[in-house]
Image (cartoon, rainbow, N blue to C red; front, top):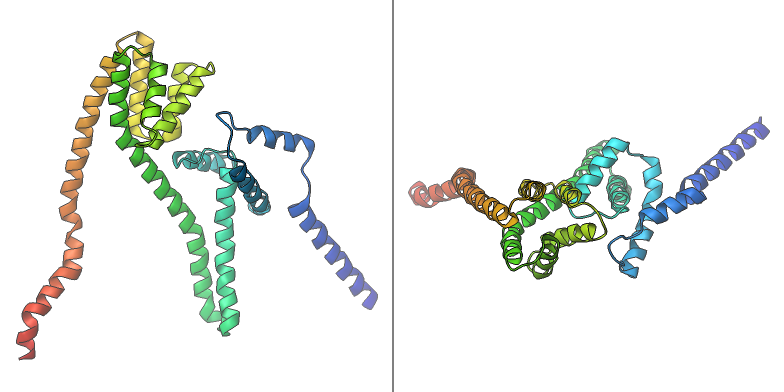
Length: 298
């Protein structure tokens, strides 16, 4: 009986060690390594070696977590598109984000359990905090990504008006559309870096031989901004039917300014409604205390 227990214990330890090796330290095959090298190649320019090394380390650390909780193809595609909206279009951005998300879901409950062991809390007292830690580990990375997406899309909307003015002026000065895109991206690099990077990527895609219509469609898809989608549709239509590009840009620019003014008016009208709750919670009780407090004391 003792020999059977020892044998089962030995087999269990061996199974755990082999599983951990296959999960964490198993080398990938030649085809997977070649695909990883091809997917991590930078088509636009040469990346910073220090940043590349750091990203590789993060990817290698977070890959075991990806194997523990795999992601479906549909969810991975949707999440990768959302990361592109936030400006993280690198191939390893999905792996890094998932690693951060899973690490937060694991580390926060472990931190609560360590505090429980240090202060000798009862299990019934620490269980709600563990559930709350799991909830925060699930929600906080998603909320941070949503904030990144909304902030970048807002910057793209604000930079589009200046980009359209410069683009129309450049085309009227005698430049072609591709050269005008390059000129606008150079001029707006310090003021509006997001729209500058997007225009520069469109210029590079057209320069390497891609069709102009496909390049503009990719611009609309990877940003997710309605104003940029309408701008790309205007340029595609003007290029397809041979109409004046400058006139189309100026017409869309005027409609965009009207839309921005309407959004500002809408925000101003919402401000009065949003002020009701702070006034009711903070201002009115303070006024009542100041006015009625002395009378109540007397």
